[in-house]
Length: 375
Image 1 (cartoon, rainbow, N blue to C red):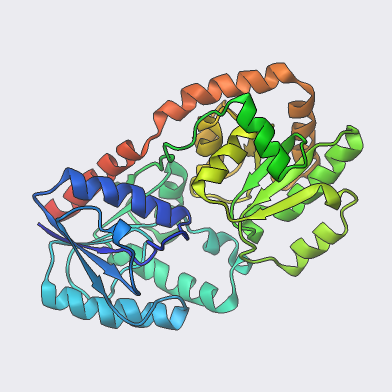
Image 2: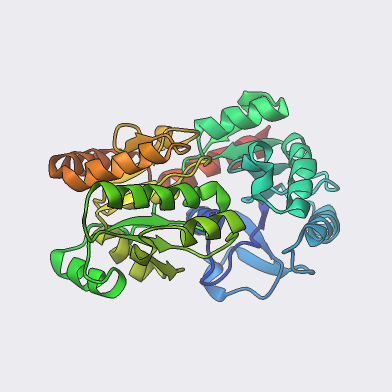
């Protein structure tokens, strides 16, 4: 079979959630199926590390698609022209963008539709693009894969699509994430948290990640329990809004909030494994990979009781109301004060993490590919 893949989010040293999904699944699928040929479509110069096997042909199509107008041009002209000439058995798009002007079979991986529920969390132009085109993409796709039952139901309901057309393909976790020893914990705390224990957030600093309420909750936690605990924030300031900035500047204990920026996996695995707890409390997620990463590192998790997060964490996390600062801060106090609770959550996390792996993800995505082609 000839399978064309949108790989524009495979960016060296810049992999985010969907980029990691693409990397981990495509690496396995292309190696596991040498009998098939894959064409990887990039929108700029690519790194050879992303050409995982001999059955891959990389192709650069212009222009670089990093803006709504260029999204449109790339998918509706550059990609469409190639697909209509090449006539592959399938076009696979791990970021959900379809080529509306192509008639080949298409499989969209739509991770979530948070922009439909919280449109103001994205810029005006991107919002207009998403809300106009993603309903069209969902209807154009021959099949859809998504990363949770929550997202499956959300997409089916919001876009009025038959749920039988949607496959759930859970995310996995990088195998580098694992528990660390006490020596590494001490070195990590010396480097990143001034030799102190710390709560941890990992993700882009985006409104949807609920950073403002996390800051407020940390302030309340520090007021409730006098301590030298820090809050370590790992991630880029993707949309460091006026509200987030104002909340941070108004914090009583802002000197205890430490920003690392983006970290390599080699560094992040130690930061994760040395944390007292992961505090990951977005108000909307299609999955929430940091929950799994923390579990793989034997780190307790505080996460939200909304959207996909209870589905991913189940009983292996403290679930909080992400819209309640008191709920988040109370969970932080519980984690800080109760060692037995921490150990219990770690043990439950060890069991829950076994339900997820990138091998399982790749296998389920391949099943979805076969369903699409054979329909």
